[in-house]
Amino acid sequence: MKATFLLAWFLLTCVTMAGAAPVTWTHQTSEGEDASSVHHYLYAEEQGEVKRVRWIWNGGAQNDPTVTEFVISADQITVREFIGSRENTDELIAGKDSSLKLDQEFAIPTGGRTVSALLEAGSKLTEDQRIALENLESILEMEREPVK
Image (cartoon, rainbow, N blue to C red; front, side, top):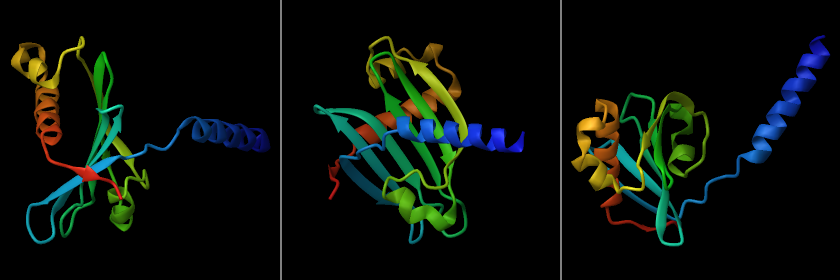
């Protein structure tokens, strides 16, 4: 019984890992709050359009890092918030999924509208959705450079 369970777990893990292609981050930028607190932003562009954004806060001097990821498609924006491990902060900043624990996930239907248009019609947004869209709008407006 135990061997069957372990085999099933192993196969499920292999299938899950095989289907999850790593994200190719194409652009980046960062900004500091103070001497120890920095926000890093990674962008994945396809054909000149941003399809994914990852916002990493390094946790400052004492906190675990947090990661907010925005996955942008034609009909929705999926927002995922993660908590990372301080030991893996450098890997997170490099765009790896090391030690991420999902804290919250929600989707915002777009109906093909831009982030700005969604915010203008904000009465149908929850508070979490509005805050996420305001953050995404700000991040998308930042100047960025290609990942080296």
